[in-house]
Length: 86
Image (cartoon, rainbow, N blue to C red):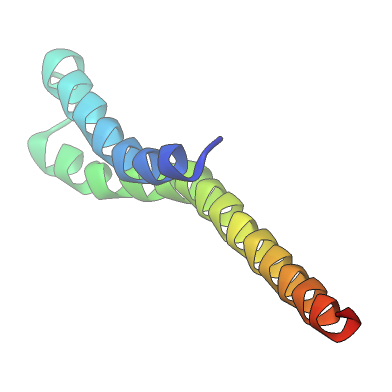
């Protein structure tokens, strides 16, 4: 997965989650769940979805950044060695 895709997923997953939840709540669950309870459940649902999915994406993003930093460090070391050889 590319860096750009991960960033978009981090933005879109909570947004889509709350949209789907609100649609399901108003279309199907309104007779069973009060508006107050639904309003309390909304941030809880978004929090858990964020912790499950977005946290993993952020971890992948951080790992990609660390790998890039390691590669840059190795490249600079090789460039310094090339300077000493010539």
